[in-house]
Image 1: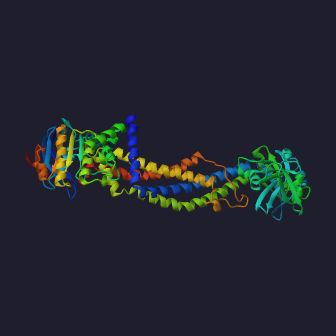
Image 2: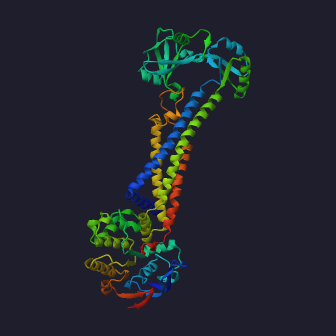
Length: 381
Length: 225
């Protein structure tokens, strides 16, 4: 065993010096290889993390939302609709919700303003608000600080920050401002007896479709949105966008495949001569193949690690600057937010299989061909 | 002792350009002797050395090493025998460019997987014995022809082989360096090594170090003294 380990050390040592001797070729290969892994890993990490964020956001959202429509557009829903819905089998709870967006022209920022559900209404007493981490950060707010708004009636409006909160998902809480119902109605000049929408809780997921069908009958001017429908919409949007990027990248991947095959398979005359010498001085065919295997493994693993790390930093530290325009960019997402690092083992394995494995395969055959040449070829010059 | 019987070796067998480099060689090479294969270009000297040194298998005929028939062994076993028994000094030296002298010397021992420190010490000892210790860290392409050959000799000796095989060792050397090589040969012969040379250099053939000259022509032995 010790001999085997020593032998591998010698082979790796020789491989490293061999790589160093062909600096230009190998650095070029490493650079392109790393670039490809970086691009693919960036798309994968980004879309995966975004999906998880969306799932987290939606996990806390109501089972069914009822929105009143006027001429095909979402309108305020009167409190009387809660009565119209009446008692319905399977519906555990029904509650009018108040939420909206407040644009801060000074900061050029959009906040999501919400009234917490009745069960947690105690979080914010009238005159006090709770703000998300990004809002607090952006405005330099601490507890007991004052936050100023311009109300829709034109009067200035201020609230004291009761607390700031963060969540495991920035997407959930980053731009959130929670306030009491009274303050909300004052700020937006919101008509009494009206809600933004109505949220229903349904205990049994099997009942959801029945509940939706009954609601459609009882409230013909309203639409019902099931959580699973929102999830599905998000999924298809992410898949579609990821698909577009992957199609765009496929050209680059193909170019890399050709490049790798050419570089890996086309052993130079110098390399062939070297293999001949090694065989003549007592290296077995297996030793030569093993040495070349280490060479391929070192290049591909280094490229994989560098590319993946760069992609990780790109996605989770630099907010995916390269892909933002394609992959983010719809109105419900905020201009800037940081994704929570999320790495999926299966995804790494897939990427590894599609980048490292083909390269290793591409190198083995030509090396095997060169390695089985007769050792006396060196003598024959 | 190495025994060759009925050795024939063909290249490109069965094709239009089939060529028989060796045409029936019967020869016994005793241990601890310096034997030179002498002959013009194309006479089969180098091919004979490759067959004796387990670098190539004969097309027909038998090679026996210490009473063991090795002509039919698979490549893997042949390589092991070659690694332990033979050390080679090639005509073009065949050192690996970009590596230092000492690294080149150590190369044949890598597949054996011995410890690094003793191996390095042995490589340095060999370079020192060939008066090259001051050049041990130099890359081989920076060395002169004579120095390169001494590195090649050190490399051939790293696994302490019983037999040293040198193909046209003086072909790329001037007279002074050729004489220097013969001096090294004398030292190695005195250590009890079997030495096989191929050469068409009269200086080598006339040297007192060479105990036996086997003359070849057209793949056959024409004189043996």
